[in-house]
Figure 1 (cartoon, rainbow, N blue to C red):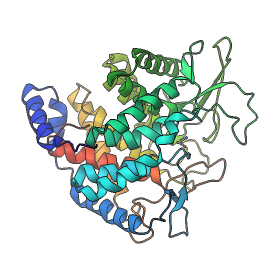
Figure 2: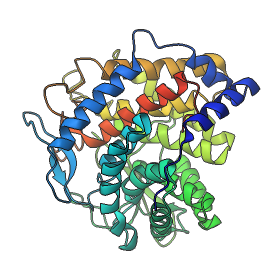
Figure 3: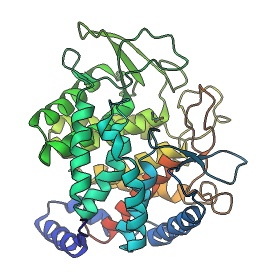
Length: 414
Ligand code: GLY
């Protein structure tokens, strides 16, 4: 049976205590600032309004919203095996997190349960973390459901089967990748950093200690092999499966092997911030700052990146609102870990400014469609989901708004 946790009061007390002790001093300092002209509750209520419209139009089947393409009004749906299947239940869990209204819990639970079989199939890739941690991970945080916990622990063990100890990283895509001529080698993609969170969680919640070690090894190897001297990231590194040696660094979803693909860099910012949270190893905090700084330095004035920072057609290239949402959410967390007050405030202020721009008429969907945001780019080289509403942009936008709301109310961020 699912038990509803009332964390609200508890976290408020914890937050106050930490503030008094100075442990989250930076977060508390920043959270005193309202964010100029930005009403976070208004934006969260906008999200709830859009979500209500989407829920009222859902097909009565196992179909999960993924995108709304330019010119379309309705969601395009996918099944539970799609890599984006966890974001929709995750959004519903955030709606419950914010409102504590059981109607959201019931819908979130229904969609979360659709994903249970993923834990017991042979893993189709590193996306198991996106699929199950964004959905059941949030569900478990909010309800303590033993059903969710059991599925998450099995999923973490399943993800770990993709680990190659010679290489020291997880095999991100075990299948032949459509449209590529790569030999079938061990590949690791930047996105994979996000899915270490499932392993860290499992190692703290009854899973094997080995899961923690795998996550740390993956983060260290990726740090060594998947960045240029300016800390911009390569999307993909190919390794020799047998010897573990790096073969080459290339792109799959970016403009070129040497370009900075916006969402890849956003995954790096979020991934290393999360890895620092889970390990408290200062080298990860230092690295999170470095990968953040190159991204911030190269952003256009409105803080929403073009889909790839090096596309020569800029300023006519499409934007990627999803990268901005992922980064805003990560920066709110990172601002709480950085001891230098000036830098911490810079990260916090940038996050609020990104959210402000995403919440403007230029980026919110409003009456155009029922998503929260317009103008994300999924896979430009494949010509798919360009300038579209995409479910993961909405997920990280809502996550960032909830994080900001919690910081402003002196609650624990997570
Ligand atoms: N593979 C996830 C992404 O498109 O970012």
